[in-house]
Amino acid sequence: MQKNTEWKKQVQEFHQESYLWSLCCCHYDKEMAKDVLQTVYLKIYEGKALFNEKSKLKTWLFSIIRFTSIDFIRKYGGVVETLNDAHHQIPGPEGHVDSDHEQLFRNLLSSLSGQQREVLTLVFYHDLTLVEVASLMDLSIGSVRTHYQRGKENFKKLLVQLKLDVDTL
View 1 (tube, one colour):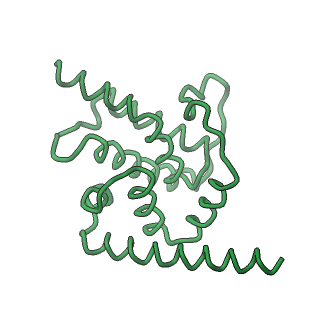
View 2 (spheres, rainbow, N blue to C red):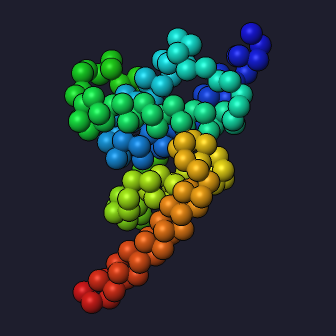
View 3 (cartoon, rainbow, N blue to C red):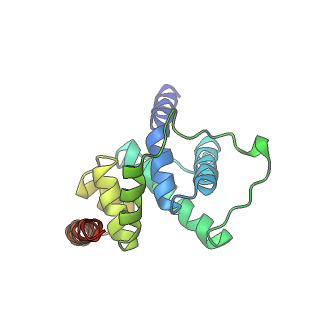
């Protein structure tokens, strides 16, 4: 019982990172990201998602978020209706305001393929290793390395193109 309580506290400590990962998985739809995260926490609370300690807690949690967001997008077609004020119990990250740079990077990331975007987000924003990403995404390490390399190359091309576009203005 004590061990169970400890990892539940750790899940709470990952709230901000979990919310940001949920945002990425939900194509930056804030309401859907909150709904997904609330559903994930409910799955954990009700014992429908059990931590078997075969991976790191963060990898396990992010995997649940990813698959729950996929279910939401399939079920709701990418749109979640707002119910009422009581429905929004999960806050966003404290004091987090999107800067112009964050929005620019989000736009560039959204131009990549889904798997390239997810791999780069997990590696650069959530400090996961490629092995952890492979486990989370249920892909081989070779596939993850390919998505990682191609994602970096494509992101660089987009940045260079953006610089060229800005320079011509």
